[in-house]
Amino acid sequence: MTKTLKEYLKEVKEKGIAIGHFNISNIEAIHGIYNAAKKLSLPVVIGVSEGEESFIGRDEVACLIKMLRERDNYPIFLNGDHHYTFESVKNAIDAGYDSVIIDGAKLSIEENIKTAKQCVEYARQKSKETGHETLIEGELGFIGQSSKLLDKMPDGVSEETMTKPEDAKYFVEQTGIDLIAPSVGNIHGMIKTGNPKLDIDRIKNICDSCGIPLVLHGGSGISDKDFKEAIKAGISMIHINTEIRVAYKQALEKSLKENPDEIAPYKLIEPAVEAIENIVEKRLKLFSNL
Image 1 (cartoon, rainbow, N blue to C red):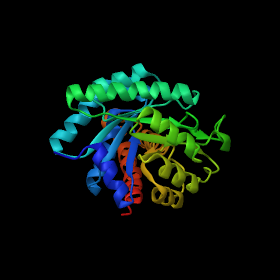
Image 2 (cartoon, rainbow, N blue to C red):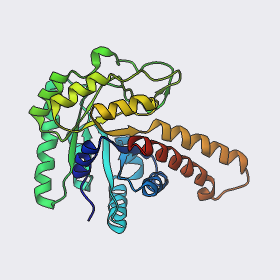
Image 3 (tube, rainbow, N blue to C red):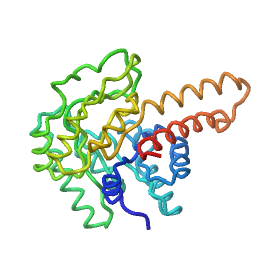
Image 4 (cartoon, helix red, strand yellow):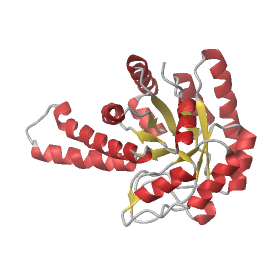
C-alpha cells in the first residue's frame, strides 16, 4: 500500500520539497495531472472546490481517485478545496476525501476557530469509525476568492490581511488542524501585469510558530524564484489552478478553430488535456527540484 498523505507531507518537509496540488473542473483534467505525476513518479493531490465538486460530483470524483490509487498503488490524493461550511466539509469527509479545507478566512478569528475545530472533531471521529484519515486544513488571512486573470489585486487583499505568526500559532493550538493555509503575499488568480512577491520571512516565521505543514494557495503566477524560496522557508504543498484553466481554454480554442468539422468531444479535448499535463509536469519538477 502507498503511504498516506500525512506521511508524504512529512517526507517532503524532510527533503525540502513540496507536493503539487492541482484543481480540476472536469473529469478529463484528472488524466492530464495523473499522467504528469506518473511520468515523474511523484505524489500528487487533486483538488475540487465546492463549485468544481458540484459540477463533477462529490462521490464520483472520490470513487475515481480511490480507484486509481488502489488499482495502481499510486500516491494520488483528493482534497476538498475551499469548503465554506461545516456541512460541506462533513459531506466531503463522508465521501472519503483525503483532506478538506475549511475556509473561514473572511470570518473573525474566533468564528474561524469555532468552525475549524468542529470540522477537526468530526474528521477524527469519522477516522475512528472507518479507518480512513481525512486531514483538515484551516485558512487564516485573506487572498481573494477568484481563479481568474485579474487586472489588479483582488478587493480586500492587502498587507493588513496577511497572516500574523502569533495568530497562526493560536489558531493551530485552538483547532488542532493538520495543515494551515496562510496569506503571505499570495493571491487567488493571476494579475495580468504580474503577481506580487511572496513574503518569505513571514512564511518562515509562521512555519516556526505553527509546527504543522504550510499550504501555499494561489500558486498560479508566482515566480520560480519565489516558489523555491517559499519551499525552503517551510511550504509543503502548493496549489495551482488558474494556470491550468488558462492552458485548457487556449488549447481547446485552438483545437476548435483548427478542426471546425470535428464533432467527437474526445478528439477536440485531447489537446487541452495535453496542455494540462505540460503545465503540471513543469510545476512538479520545480516543486521537487528535478
